[in-house]
Length: 454
Image 1 (cartoon, rainbow, N blue to C red):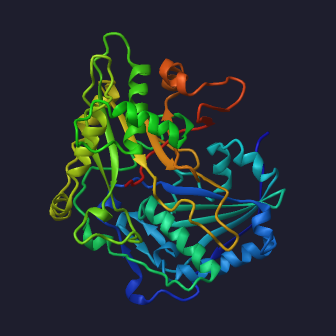
Image 2: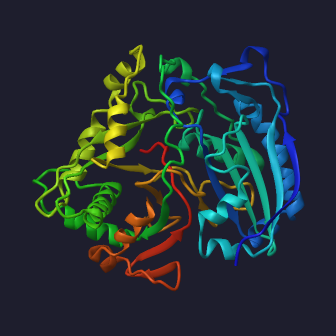
Image 3: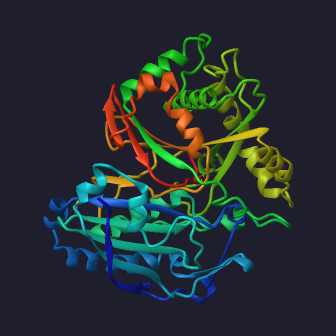
């Protein structure tokens, strides 16, 4: 059963007060410069019972539009237009597209068997759709009375934490809470733009189609893997984190599944880091902008081709290097030469295999209460890059959802891996199988990575 979405109305929501003249131009930062122009998107699902306890659906939409207008006076760049050639957002108060739709199915049809192919229909923009608007909202009403609020915020000026902090603030304004709206728009002064002649961050978007699957790991399963990977640690060494544990496990299974006889391929692993907490003084979590960086490493493999204890340790060591001294050098250097041309050639030849990890764990993904409680579930649309693994906390229980995105051929090999199958049984008759604390859900479509992580 496909999800059919009918657009009922489109309008522009403008700030309730005009943006002052001295704030009419919001300049991009260096990290904004190197960030692909994609849309950080998320859909927030609310059951009919939670919404109708306070509003009917029409009232709920009106309340959201009113509070959005109010919060845009504080987040003034979001109502402007992105002028990429000039590296600036023109804060002209033209407003945010707000779309209302009717979804011809029950909300449970989407949330019981989550598919980003369906989520994309509940959002104002595709993830790789290039638009000059900074923010878009889609208010979706299901046949059962449940609603889904789809939000797309351009990654060109905001990372994932900025997305979630904005949504959390918008929800607080909607509730009419007493807490003040706190904003911080200083990214361009902290990370001035650089000379990036010849570099195009959008080059690789959509080059490789991929399929994705969502694996939900319960806390008990993660703890079991943590025990396994901790056996080789020396006394006094810090135990691996949940993300380090799952990174090691899934990387090992990917390498084992895709390795061929006589294979001399080198794996380049990247992981994203949140810079806010690593600066001196640290930035508040509501600092708006792109405040992420990535670390790179070439994992050391044992004779079995695995990286049980080395991977997490190497990852931690590389992340530790991203300290205030590193950030100061990054800010003060006049140019940026990522040496990506040679790397791109090696990847194109198949000599270098990139694998990217990012984590949304501990981000306020579910701290979104518009007055009718937190969402019953949240989910992203399809992504756009291959060999990407994204982690997100489950709503409760201390578990983690891992979104694994590979090419069609590699995914077929990955799913046949015996050790993976020992933990995650795959059923050919259904896209969702539960056993041994794991849930496997098929995500139809390509993939992309460009989020910050703690």
